Length: 176
Image (cartoon, rainbow, N blue to C red; front, side):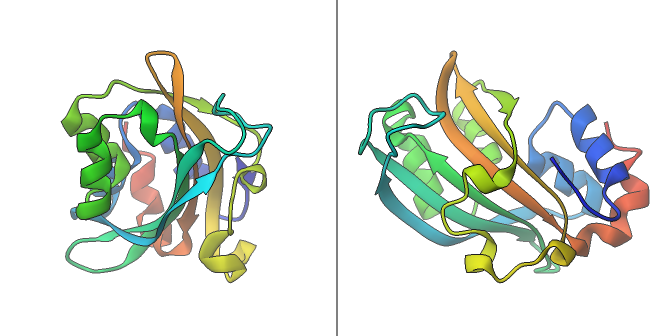
């Protein structure tokens, strides 16, 4: 995790939660959370990767913002690299056709997952937040993790928790 100003309560609360980032955000900000996709395209896997796939295997690169359903305020920017061949077609269809965040879809489709935190977000980002337009002062915390299902890696996720969460940080310490 990247340590930047004002992140200790947020980081602590995220470390304690066993649910999805979507559920955490909904509890924190008091409104429903939707995803707005900025990019949704197929890419080829690099030779060396944490997803245990062969070079050039098709992967989905998705960049999205998690925002408040009522306020429209963006709270998290995330980039994911997804092994679509390891996930059910229903998951992939909903990811492309709905405003549901990844965590919500995984839960509703019934895919049990575990998270493994990895070193630094810079290793896995394809284009960087908003094509490099976000600076350290624009986000409170960044983290990268791999999501596994049935001991098989299915995606890498890098999240940037935006400064729009600052008004909610006193509440972060109360969320479990």
